[in-house]
Image 1 (tube, rainbow, N blue to C red):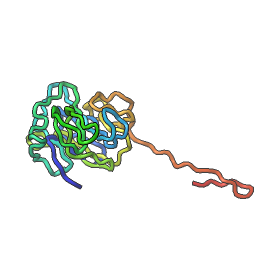
Image 2 (cartoon, rainbow, N blue to C red):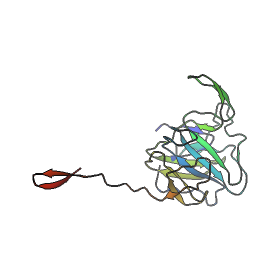
Image 3 (cartoon, helix red, strand yellow):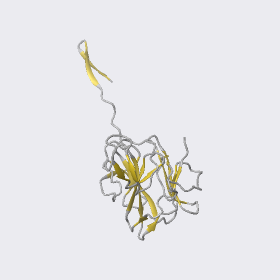
Image 4 (cartoon, rainbow, N blue to C red):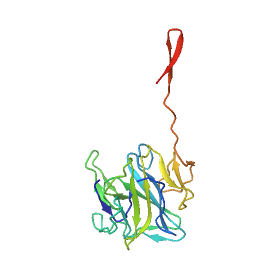
Length: 210
């Protein structure tokens, strides 16, 4: 797997996701690895962070896809990814994992029609979440994991997150809430129905077939 780093270190796989610290103040609160229709933008995987009861500066935090990479260099086009970003008490920070590699507040021009200019609003990481499963870890400036989890194969438009926010309880959400509180209905596991079977008449009797 291609190993890439960011000024936030998130790592990805699935067993049941567990935090990596005793009393974390910054959490991986929700992630959506297979985004087809969910806003704010479809076709982009996302990660949401949340803080606890105090304002949390996230300067020098890091995110990566490699469980062994805990020392992360400065990332972003000007080396100051999230340099002035804070998460307010019980607030949220949305991060796009879209292989775009950009920081908020940059004035850019689209390389495709209508070739207009725009200002970036979110943090974009230089990798994408793999819906087949990965490891996510949030690493602090001392190269110690603040929070981490693993996940397996993900379904389209179904996120995984904590409920209540910042708790140890993880759920699947059919209605993801990127950068918002996880208040929608959640389930502990996904159950798949058996494939349908059909009746066909053979002579005077009926038989089932796949």
